[in-house]
Image 1 (tube, rainbow, N blue to C red):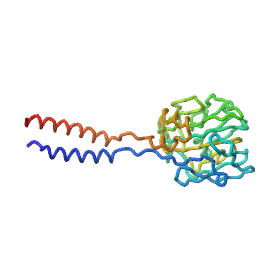
Image 2 (cartoon, rainbow, N blue to C red; image 1 turned 90 degrees about the vertical axis):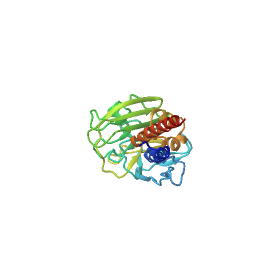
Image 3 (spheres, helix red, strand yellow; image 1 turned 30 degrees about the horizontal axis):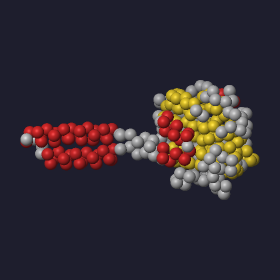
Image 4 (cartoon, helix red, strand yellow; image 1 turned 120 degrees about the vertical axis):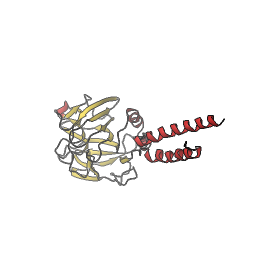
Length: 278
């Protein structure tokens, strides 16, 4: 007995429900720190209330009106801002983060974004061990800090961001793409450990100090891996960050493809039945 057209249409309707249920959720901005509020320097503009805490280790960061866009945090080489979530790979195997930075000092190690607990964790720095250039930790892959080849310039704004993909705790196929100014360095291998910290530091290391000296603006942390096109849109205008984050990861999941195939097959069957009754 052949199924009726009515039965097929019911299957189509059910498939649409599967299609909607199987769609992947878009990423969200976990933290967005614009540093535009002089009374609340660590304010989170993402809407998630992940406000940062200003830490004074001799010279706390302060508000300055001279930012990349609007205000900025002016780090004085003796303080940082801790934001209240762990950005380690155990929780966020895919992660996108970045900031606009303007250094006043480029010696030693100057941390921009860092959650290192001593086990070569995620971090973006200026690093003397990488020729004094902008650098990123890649985990337990010697020489541990990837040299971007991009030299910092005192008094000059530049974007520095990173996209981590498949960075699961322990061995895996993790990769890192760096975005520095107008340069893109893709597919850098990574091998991270997890981190014990329940927070991440802006302008310093949670463990080793390594304080930034200079301004930092428009820090963002997104729980997904942005494409190069999406990063280009963010770099072109920091105000794009929430809109771009909502597009990251919006691809059909396996259940969606199965439902789509069922829809195509059902539609073809309906057309065949109509031809048989003409």
